[in-house]
Image (cartoon, rainbow, N blue to C red; front, side, top):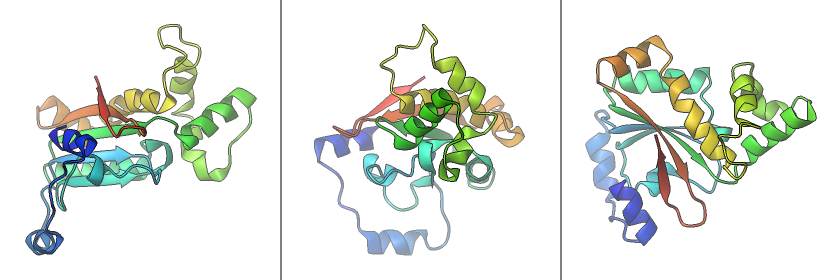
Length: 185
């Protein structure tokens, strides 16, 4: 979050990519795994003012946890001992909006966003849509960041790491307008 503050204030550290490349050529030791949207307007490495080797980033439209991204997060936790996973949504997410629209219209979306349409995602989406406890103004990116961390920790590897206190899974929402990341508990 200190890196995000530097990013928002435009006071990012200068990165020596040549030295970082040489340093990390022998291995990696990321302090966080980030499941983020593939949206071209957000890059977690910039948003957290991080250098090479700091973040283990998986990006997929809608920042949704599918088999590939969960397996990647399992890898970073089990093999690289990464102590933190953040599911990072953002406002104005086209993939999430298209999925919500397809549910509303009761039609299957294009195959590009099929992972968002998976049977596992439909009940939580329906739960959030129309739930009076969730404000209608809540961005759907925030909704996905809220529901994805619990689904990520449901795998044996990740849930064991959480239970042993070796892993914390959190959600965040990136604000496109100012670059701030809002933590979601």
